[in-house]
Image (tube, rainbow, N blue to C red; front, top):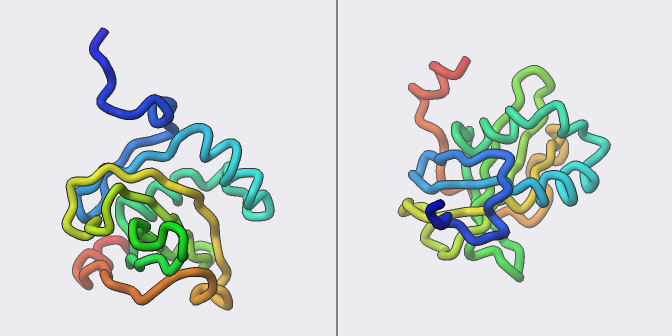
Length: 140
């Protein structure tokens, strides 16, 4: 059996996707079951795994993190869930702060949903990328 190119902690994955910057992004089972779901139990993330995936694959926008511990290496993908008008926010940590150049491996740190009144809350910096208007029209 060939050896996996991913670290052992990345091998039990819920999903693996590619973001608009051509980075490979994974959500590990451990992060999903031991952090995202219990940490945000009020948001019913269990039924929204596809919305979490869509926030990375086809985000409305991306921000840089301002978290002092790992902000430089963290991209925050955001997508508005049309039915609820909640923002799905997915912070992903990479091995380099140059994630906007692509072709890196990233790991989802958590996922959560925010009502419109909290869209600008948290340790999020300026929006550095917005999905082009043509793609937004096709999403609807």
